[in-house]
Amino acid sequence: MSCACGHHHPRHETGCEAEGPTIALDRPMIALTGRLICADPAQLMTALTLLPDHVDQSRAEPGCLRFDLRQDEDPLVWHLSELFTDGEAFAAHQQRTKASAWGRDSRDIARDFHRREAMPAIRPERRPDADAISRLLRDAFAGEVEARLVEALRAAGDLSMSLVAEADGMILGHVGLSPMTGDEAAFALAPVAVAPAMQRRGIGQALVRAALAGAGSRPVVVLGAPDYYARLGFRPADLDSPHAGPFLQVAGDLPAGARIRHAPAFEAV
Image 1: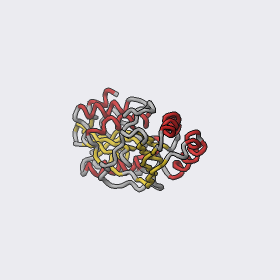
Image 2 (image 1 turned 90 degrees about the vertical axis):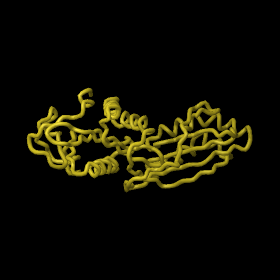
Image 3 (image 1 turned 30 degrees about the vertical axis):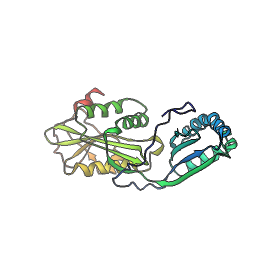
Image 4 (image 1 turned 120 degrees about the vertical axis):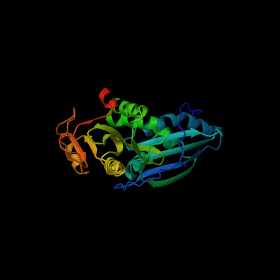
């Protein structure tokens, strides 16, 4: 949504929350929602002048996951939705804001804010998630390859399972399973992605465990770092595959020498 400050501010809806298992982080994220309420045209001009830079500076903070702002039909009112990696990141945001021009000159603008702790939960991908998943993959891998892979798997009907980790309406992680062909029925696990600011906090491992549980008795094959995936129940795989080698691993039972092939989308990346 565009507003008088000249920015486009995506509307963040919180009515549709993640319904799957919660991921127990070592420390909670911090979510903030609420309103800025200007009392008169002078305060409105202060907001119009200073908010664009405040939004840009906030989004550039390393611990800021989301900073959305939209103007109400009443131009004196703005609605905000913020999400930070943890309490320390939120405190750093408050400290920077206090020292900024916005913090100094907007003190008389009324605030109606609600702060709460947030934890991610795992749920299946929904149709509206596709663009957000692609953005996450580009950010997590600093490139287009993984995003194009998932898009191609989805388009071909080969995304057998697609799970996301969501917190306060924001997708922070993703894992996909696709069917493999060959001597035995199996799934390929790839890719696994977590938002850069939330990596190394257990979200990726939780997504992999959820995917393995969803695969049931069918074996799951992955190409990845052995030290990481060994902790999740994978072991070296002696298989007839173009990707045979130390990074090819399996969770579950596949006979030694079994022929397996990834879905066609993998050949294009």
